[in-house]
Length: 172
Image (cartoon, rainbow, N blue to C red):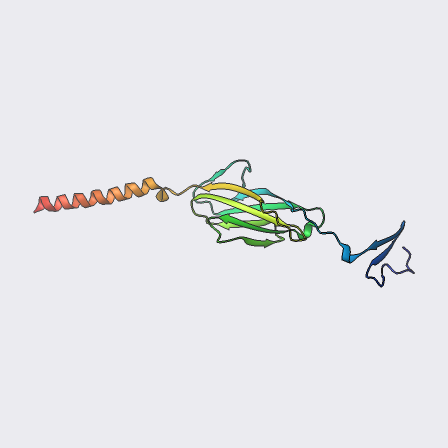
């Protein structure tokens, strides 16, 4: 690999020739192999209001949780910088959110209830891992969002109406 010789040469048939210390390497750009293997997707970390969450089973977040952040990755040894991602919070997002090569997503002010984050990735040849990875969690409701509070509120309004009616009848 001296300074007087060219670092690469293209032959008439389109093949590329590269000199090395132990000989010559020939690459045929028309014969590049397709990568049929979809990358394995993994959710690495979930953080709610700056507190890391366990990844094992379904997690319950307290009412008033402001921000949930997800960090995920996919294994691709061929070209890891070209792995693309998309994620979706089932029931919240209208469709898949294209993350590009970013390996994180975040949501703020999520409504109370059960949620599931799904993440998919594709390799540099566009082969998607359709199964992907998922993480289930639940945001607990505020007291005023519970069925019990609604029942007590409706019961209180009905009771107040009946009481006002009885007071009016008694007064008459």
